[in-house]
Image 1: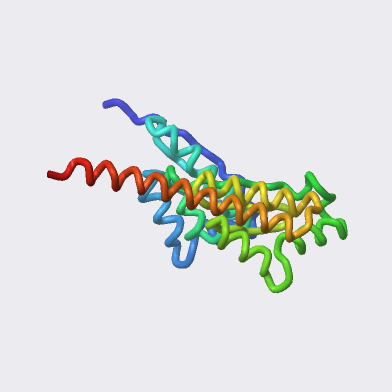
Image 2 (image 1 turned 90 degrees about the horizontal axis):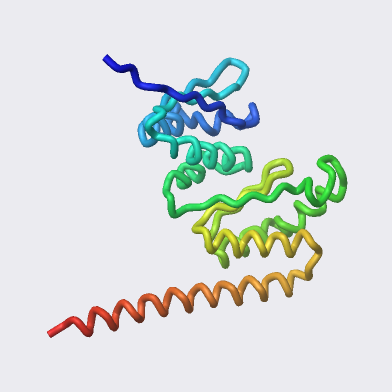
Length: 197
């Protein structure tokens, strides 16, 4: 009898975020195992080891996205959305703009979040994405096009652009997206009506 080849993947998740991967009563871990056909082992030192079939190489890339999302500060529920091929994750490392423990780092985070989280929430709403910030990581979850718009918006903020300029850019991009969606629906409607007798 042939024995199945098993690959081992170690997930790079900060120890204090491993609990998010496990979830309440182990629910997130269990859902990952069931959906991906893997076995997840959490060692006493917080090391996360995943056993998966060599016949299923896409597991590596999907679990890497999930672990990256958790490391960026997303909830387990949000991270699980990345198992869908249509959902993307984009990351920004704030250390590219400031040293980790500097006042500049705090200022940059403050610009992204805004007073009472207003800037953060406005980007999420207009770009239709989810954003998380943890330590020096900024994560964005959504479809590929929306993630790219939010990514470029945040880069403009980090580069010191005025908020009026940033949100004008974001609102224009949102209108472009909506127009594109409308065109697709319009064409679909015309095709369907043309086929009627």
